[in-house]
Amino acid sequence: MGKYKIKTHQATKKRFRKTGSGKILRAKGHQGHLRRRKSDRSKRQMKKMHEVEASGLKKRIKRLAPNLGR
Image 1: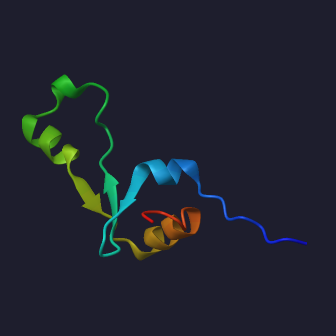
Image 2: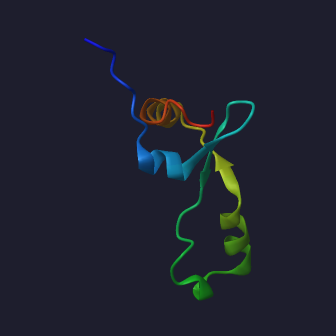
């Protein structure tokens, strides 16, 4: 019996990014719909990538996408 390949969860791969130092970044939601009602400040803040800080979430992302950022 051969070894099994680890498959990356495709939705996780598309939503998260890994930096060179190993931090996991995420994008803000609510960007694509009804943007004209949102303030310029909130739209500007949504553009930025934010660090995932919850340790449980980090662990889950690493399990779903072990090859993220390689």
